Image (cartoon, rainbow, N blue to C red; front, side, top):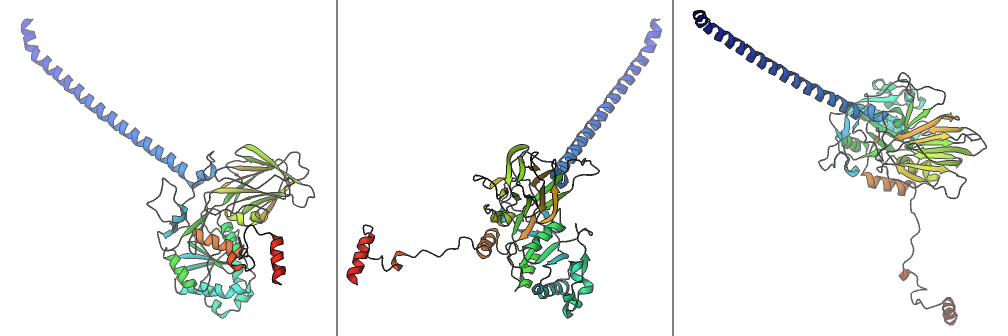
Length: 448
């Protein structure tokens, strides 16, 4: 037995070494496998977090969700396929100084939409000049509305007939212009800018508005030297005013909202107006702010306006004028039957809910920038928030100068005959503060 044990001992040691190497190899293999699994899990978690962050940062998700924050939703900084705000190193977190917002193109703009004032003969000649210059000199693709091509006054214009075949056309409400337009030029009054806002219910390309209308509060450019001004803009030498818009959603009482049928919404640049319509009774409208009932409006109606719209219908109803760069929403009653109901300004980040009061004698009517007038019945509600899609309006000078020039020229803000200096009043130059009217009259009688 001892002989056999001595003979088999080396074999047992060899077997143990083999098993030891096997276990070491298996341990190394398991360690490598666990390391790969852990690496994959970390990668998958990071990808998932990145996907979640992208979803939360996407304009669609930001437009759908609402926050209790009082700050305005951060507007997108890309306008159409080509335009965006020039990056500024002096940005604080993600909030950029509005006065430093300037236009830049990350690729040359190729398509331009020209909007002209309708039924105005004085705009025809500037329209033809601009279109020919854009096509022949700038080699741009020009879009116009189909109704422009049917204008009998334009059809008889010899200069227009030479470029007519090169124009691209669209029909409002039928053709989608999203991601097709790089640049917009408006010829006319403020209504042309409102129409541009209506055409683009999401991202709006940069808008350059020429003053060829009656008021022109939103149209800072003069047409005389349009070639130089348009060239400067196309080269990226322009300041921007981001005019916020309101996102309005009508929630009907008897309509069920589903993913397949989401509620329709409209973006307005000036204001949304709720009034009593043809009814002889007072409007009785309930106003909620972030779900809390604020007040009930008894009067002719209510105006909810942007800072841009504060100088339109709202100012005629007694509201204050707000610079378009201020993030705010103006709420103005129309002829309220109250001596203490004054217009108010609320933060741009809130959600307003407006509904017909249950005990109201009549329904209400709502219009969006003067269009799409609809009736609000009992149980219906209107939700109003600030949209993330502003209208990038190109400045002629800068944000401050353009706005105050419009106030002075269009609304004659603070126009008054100046008070004369004391040296200009010959009858008061020799008087003192102790002189009375009787003493002055006595002096005049002695002089006479």
